[in-house]
Length: 333
Image (cartoon, rainbow, N blue to C red):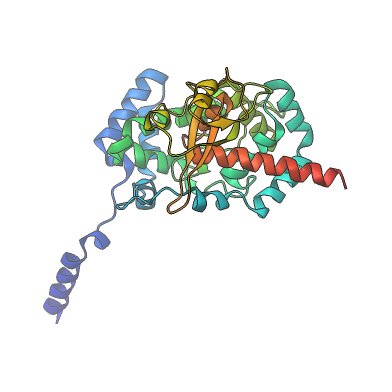
């Protein structure tokens, strides 16, 4: 009987090797060990302590699944993308967020030149005004991507380094910080490097807390945009009318404005833009529907520094416009 049970156990073990074997910790990776030695040498960390933190986490398969490109990429569709953020819930939530944080938003506009509605819209798109900030361990997520996702390992190793520096500077336990599956943190979803470069202590409590301080989030979003070239008082985008399909070279010019509005007008592209304006031609495509075209100015490009997608930037812009309109209508009652 004992021989039978032993044989059965062996057969089950061989049939399900991954279920039987515990996954290795991050610390078991030679790349992680080399990383710990490197940041110890360059930043004065204790390599053993870093490896002890790595030993407490394991490669997260959910993180790898979420970041992997789909096997069959979905067709781009502005028609499907837009309603995710341009809806009554986000608009009404944005008005409430603006009302609740009017003083901080006005101060951010005065200091950095970024309109309140744009700051509100970015926070609305990123985390639904702080409601959805992510529940992944940031150390685990970044370490998984740094050492088990070769496609972007260099980027995530840099962000892991920035995160450990950020935690040390702010007296945080790296194992306790939560964020997105890609390691973005807090109400505005800053990556650790962006937090160290652009975040500000906007509530004056002598620390930057993007997870718990709405004021810090507001000031940091505004400063991020200002540091990337936001032009106070200048437009973001205007709709364009085209006589037909545009020349491919106009779309291939890139997201950074490099075209003269006057030259586009000579080609039949009509928009409310001064002829000397430098713009980009934005195409918002949807399958089996006419493409929507806009001219984007420098401020449109600046929004794409937050997320490098024309769909994202247009969602932020249009949500900002809807929030401002709704707030004005409410005030006029």
